Length: 195
Image 1 (cartoon, rainbow, N blue to C red):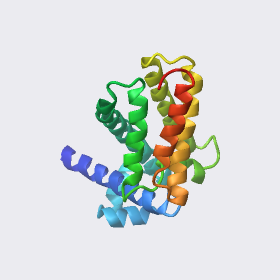
Image 2 (image 1 turned 180 degrees about the vertical axis):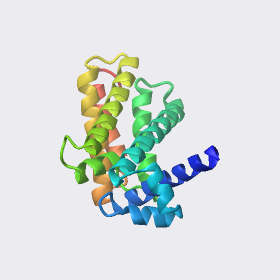
Image 3 (image 1 turned 90 degrees about the vertical axis):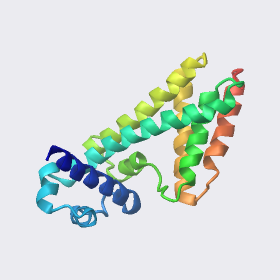
């Protein structure tokens, strides 16, 4: 019985994530999530007392998915850069490029959440901010592992390039945005002798 309950909750979360991606947070109602998932309203409200609670849980799930995916793809792409310094940093943009090429790409859930929940004290906005700060910490670790000085400052700059690529790809359809951002990062790293 516990497995079935867990499966229904997962189905609700995955359905909500897909609908939020496609239609946005405000344009996706609880009734739509319930209808598309096929889960009863009673079951849905058993797991999520409000739409905000559902959104928060979806974003937590997405954070875990994204972190795991990014780690795996960076490790895979980095194999082609074994002879180059900063290979994992380069690989990070290759992973970003791969993501942007997907038919399902609708921008970043966390950027979109901040755009729709603009009050910085709103729990959804705060959770999205936490995700972005965790990405910055990840980038800073890659910089530290590569022995690059000023890793905190550079991690902010690289995250600006990443988020800029995501937004530009989403808003104007520039599918090469991650590759362009990667070139900009390489120029920046070469200026401190890490090509």
